[in-house]
Each structure stands twice: as structure tokens, then as C-alpha cells.
Image (cartoon, rainbow, N blue to C red; front, side, top):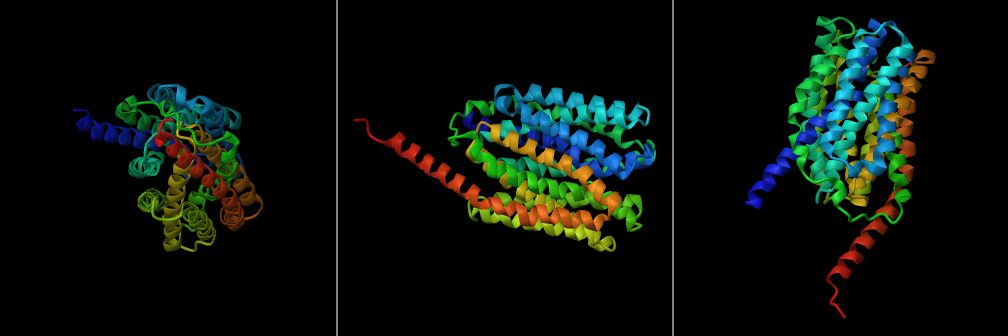
Length: 396
């Protein structure tokens, strides 16, 4: 009986992870449309719109960083429901508040906190899996399909609900996803006690790589809608490209799941980092619809490929989910910093400047920390083998 229930439980967890991650990633995936709404509907400058993104994504990051030491102690379902409620309510308020940068930033921060709690629940719930790479890959694949549907709605919202329509559509999408969270009723990640890190700080190289990659790709992604507009592409066309290109993320998650036990983990991560840098340069030098769509496609392949590997690496080092939660928080904090920094590069330079800066962070600086991560993984593997030998050793 229990054997028959196991596949159903795994499937339920995958569905729940997909929904929770899709909603949480609206914080960043919907950023191009939010930036467009802020600049058109609120008349904010690029720097002002980037500042709103900084508060929203920064709050997501800080909430995850603060909550990471205790992420494994609470019911993922309750944490997720609280986060989704906070995110939905805050976006609804942003839709109706006056065009005040201070007010919008304040409620964007509350929305980001809600997204952070939602993502914390997803990361912690899957960290204790026996095959974390594949579990995260399956959850991310489902999330991508949902993100495609969600992102296809947002341009229509701005057309039919006014220039602020993005901020009304998001609460509706969150409400539709809430009933699908029943899969969180499984065990908490905290019930897995096999922590392989001797010191929690040994995860620092992984956190630095995570942050640099997110800073670079995030700075460029936040202004992709504006890049398309600068190419004189119609708004609906830009929306279709940015939303449907997310399907390419399935290639990234699929490759990560396929190669997780066949290719050296560090080689795979390094390839993804370089690919992310190339993506940023492609956006910065796009000259028309074809090159813009190609950049968007490669963006999703590389980011989802690297994201699965980083989450899986964190789970291998710390199955309680603390390191994965902290890493995701650092990633989102770097994304938050990237938005206003990208805005400054736009206001005082051009989108090409953003692309070069982003590529340097992803493809040149981040790979420098792979050697240190290699040592941490090697030490963790040796500790695991020693633990296994001790477990099977005969009693004296």
C-alpha cells in the first residue's frame, strides 16, 4: 500500500513545487512587464523603475536569508500560503496607490517578502530528496510551463486593465494557484539529518557563484522589454517572445537532470556560467526580432540549467534546505542589486553597457570560484564515504 502511495506523493510534491516556484519567480520573471508598467503607467524613470525592482527582489532575498536558519522547522504549506497571501495583497495595493515612488517601493518590498516565503517553502521541501537534482529539475520544468502561461497573460493585462494592469493580474494568478499546494503535506526537509557540511560557511564559494550569475543575468533581464521597445518591436510581439522563450528553459532543466550523474558537476556549472554571459551580450547587441528571440531563448536555457545545478549542489552539501534557501536568497539579492545598477548603466550609457557588465560578472568572475567549490565538494564526498563505511563496519 505504501509503495503505491509513494509515486502519488512524489507527483503531488512536484505539482506543488511547480506552482510555488512559478508564483515566487514572478518576482523576477515578470520584472520586464513591471518595469514597462512603472515607466508608462507611473511615469518613473529607468532608474526609478529599477529601484522598485531592487526593493521587491531585495526583500525576497532578505526574507530568505533571514529565514534560512529556520526554514526546515516550519510546515512548508503554511509558509507558502502566508507568502502567497502577502504577495497578492501587496500587488493589489500597488495597482491602486498614487504614483509615488516611495509608496510603490514600500509595497513592492512587502510583495517581495511574500515571494521569498513562497520560494523558501519550495526549496526546503525538496532539499531532503534522495535525488535533489532531478526533483528540482522536475519542479522547475513544471514551473516553467506555468510561467509561460502567466507571462502570456501580463501583456494582455496591460492592454485591457490599463497601463498598471500587471499589478492587478498577479494577484489573480496567485489566487488561481493556491488550491494546488496540497503536495506540501509531505515531510519537512528538517527531518533529514545527514548534513555533510562541517561548517556552514564552507558553502561560501557556491553562494558567490550563485550571486554573481544572478547579478549579471538579472541586470540584463530587467530591461529586456525596453531593449525590444528600442528595436521598435510591437508590445504584443515582445510579450510573446519573452513568454514563449521560457519553453526553452525545459531544455535547460532536462539537460541538468540528464547530465547530473554523467558529467562533472563543476564543468557543467562552468559551461552554464559562460552561456549566461553570452546571453547578456546577445541581448545587448540585438538588431532585430530574430536576434532578440535567440537571446531570450538562450537566456532561459542557461539560467534554468545553472539554477538546477546550484540548487542540487546546495542540497548535496546540506539536505536540510538551509544552504539552498540561503543561496536562493543571495541569488535574488544579487538580482535586486542588478536592476538599479542596470538602470544607471542605461541612463548614463546604453543597453550595450549593461550587457558587457553582465557578461563579465557571469562568464569571467564567477568561474574563478569553481576551484574552491571543487575542494568543498571533494571533502563532502569523502565525509559521506567515511560515514557509509562506518555504518557497515562490524561491531567489535
